[in-house]
Image (cartoon, rainbow, N blue to C red; front, side):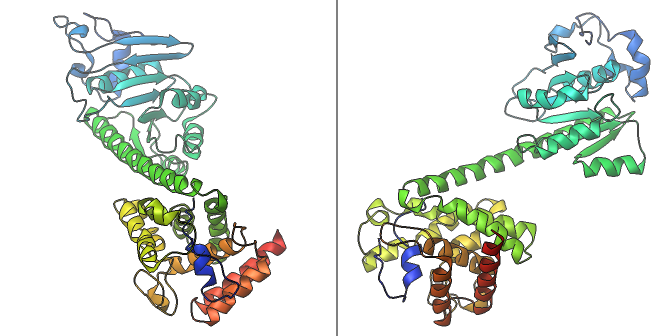
Length: 410
């Protein structure tokens, strides 16, 4: 750990760069065709007789697996094609939730999706969908718009507002083809539309495409969560820094709003709060947790944490806006920082913004080797360093004005 000294020269670098880390539907039976009383409506959905009829000479059980479970208004049916691959997917068969209050329409969709190898779950009302989605975790939802009690628009809006269900694609299946309904569907977060009567090939193609996209998004989301978990584990190794990351995330949000940054820039600032020191996972404990002043050799090793962090996060496209923060949050306005010695506006803007937040939190937080400075004292130290050429003068002025106004509001 670089020990604190009473003079201000290099003061914040000693604190911020310390070695401690931040820390009921009838079932399809064998030797039976789909109920003839449903055929007329099924034809109205654009389906051929071949799509609907099951040949008497070939029982259903020879080519599909039927599993019907009844639960109040819900009928759940699984149809899975033989073979190791399901509709081109190597993993478990994707689940599709079909929501429609009209039994014949549901049966049609179930039959087609079953032939494509999907596991199909049915619901006959919108009011039970949210709970069912949480329980079953479908990969896609085919959602009828016109339903009693809760229509498809309301259901979709609820799902897209929930962090746990927002990534599930929703396809509206509706007889409505007017512009106003489609606009409303887009507004509530619908991913696609199919108008009755729909085409079998089109249905299969759209479902497959959206399921694949959803799984890609999930992989990305899971990778991000792994990174955040690593970052938080680093912080937890040092009990002295407290909730450093959480404070940076909060301050990044409000300062970004103060600067009128875009939503994506603010998101990158927030993510930077968690991930800026993730590279410390690659620093040996002998250096990272060293008590006392680091040697020049130790310091060279410690400075590698920004490059290691960049390599960890670089494969994820969603991290493109965060990587400049990770790599460059220790650069200085006069070019005396690291790792690249960038000067002035060659330093990425978000890295400059984040640096001020990081330094301010370090100064105003208590550590074993220093007291917590007041806001006024911290701003004074930061201004002295700005006068010495370390910080962007204009940005530092904006930050000081922001801090003063922020605490007045608090």
